[in-house]
Image (tube, rainbow, N blue to C red; front, top):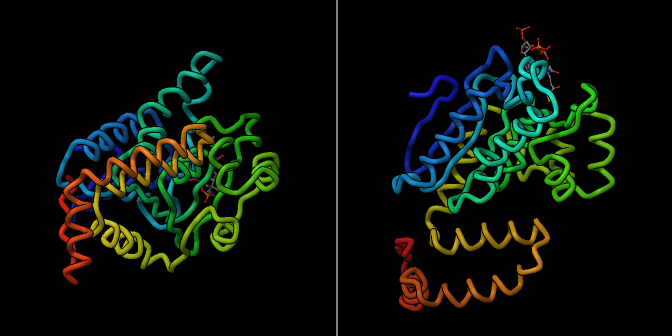
Length: 259
Ligand code: COA
């Protein structure tokens, strides 16, 4: 169905695999457009409860935007590329009401690191490597990296990583808070799947409120506290809240419906 992606839906988890392993899964125009379509599926298909984004093969998650497409671009083309990526993919992942996790299976560089950072959180294989090497090309991150890396690891480390273009390994990424878990590569998808299966047993409505509010905190929205109060109140009108509280009092497991 897709030229550059593999997709699979199992137990409510939609796994989207960028599939250009001979090019280190670099993000060309086709990948961005098809990823946009796959994300539309995540938003609209009720059978999809959560998503994993990963890369094909054992070497790379995504080694960046496809550098071979850069030579044709000027000022307008460059900003157009970045804007299109934000609209079709990066902001769409961040704002997805269903959890989206990056399973980082190797090089996660430039646009690849930015793709992982747009996800709600990251699980890494022990061979994963992260970096924003655009400075080596006379460029800067364009898919949100200057903003999201700073929010995730803090100003000093973000400055150093982006100004040197250095790569860090999975263990350092975990120390910095860039990834939540580091596991052997063979266990990567199972680990991401286990976390998502746990989240899928919770109220999908509550989970979607959490995503929106944590995003608003991370994006320094001045309305975060007010929005939390509103969404907290709205939760009291949901069937999920009645089910969750009744189940607790009746000493049984809740069966949430996302209503
Ligand atoms: N864009 C386009 N092609 C890329 C790419 C990218 N971002 N990253 C890797 N490739 C291609 C290589 O050109 C090569 O293609 P070829 O076989 O047709 O020559 C193929 O993927 C394999 O990469 P190679 O460099 O030979 O593998 P390696 O194991 O020696 O090195 C990396 C792996 C990831 C360290 C190296 O490919 C790299 O530095 N990539 C660019 C990272 C980058 O600067 N990203 C930011 C882009 S803005």
